[in-house]
View 1 (cartoon, rainbow, N blue to C red):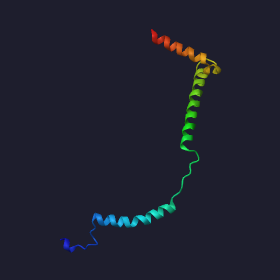
View 2 (view 1 turned 90 degrees about the vertical axis):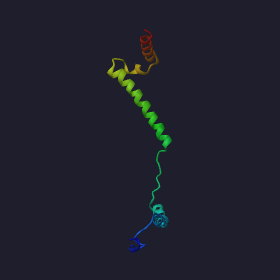
View 3 (view 1 turned 180 degrees about the vertical axis):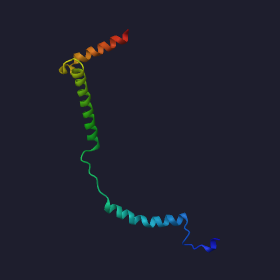
View 4 (view 1 turned 45 degrees about the vertical axis):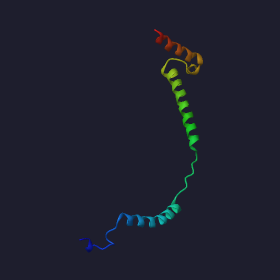
Length: 97
């Protein structure tokens, strides 16, 4: 049955690998020509710093809105140390009981 088949019709894995290796240098040369070099405007470390700053700003903004607008306090008192000390004292007082 195998004598009826032509060797060009049936390829082994080794034949496929050889053909693929012969084609690869041509593909690599084509890829190198068509590749775009990406230049980042902002480096990754700068992006992380920007995200940290935006996170801190949103937390501070949330505290101001929560204390001054939603609550009945003054917005300028939201970031005072005495206000936060009073909140901490209230929380610690409840846990001692």
